[in-house]
Length: 214
Image 1 (cartoon, helix red, strand yellow):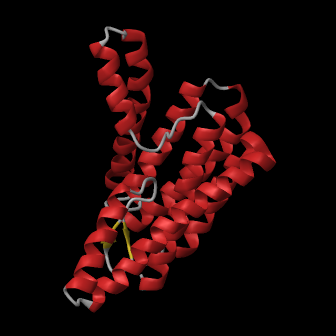
Image 2 (cartoon, one colour; image 1 turned 180 degrees about the vertical axis):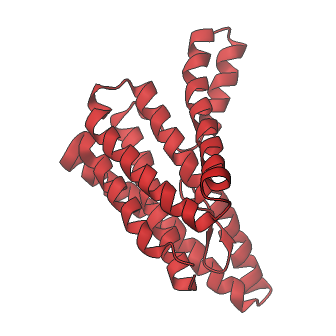
Image 3 (tube, one colour; image 1 turned 45 degrees about the vertical axis):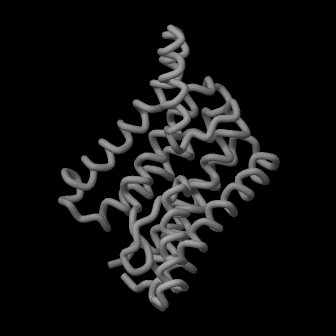
């Protein structure tokens, strides 16, 4: 796959990832459903306080995220014979369908269920779309790891004089900015379309097919 197309794939997936978090935050209880660190902290605090019902509330999206990882691994290994390019095409279609269905049902779902669906789909994205550019690892559904990689590349590029790392730093910066652009796009689409704004995420995953090439 040409470097430009690998980078473009990462940008499109990150746009979708930012949209996911904006959707869950604005329409389903002020929750960032992509990552699970917050849910895990709240789960432990709930258990420590003896609040079993509250703990279940945080355990469900964590379980959904794990299920999404397992599903993505199964698709790659069993359904696609270990071919990650076929798996990416399969996942793009599945994500597009999943968010299209969510756009139809979201208004009638509880926040817990809707956010768990987003967590499941985000996990599949995280597991399936993992490299961009010159085989650089990234996450399209949250930015903490991308910021770490950006910092490392900035140091290697400017403090150590590594030209390749300077170029890689620019690509990581683009990934971080794409996620933020996705958040802004998600905000405006929620204002314009409400729960149907999920269709924008579906469109982005369908667009990603263009950049999944060997």
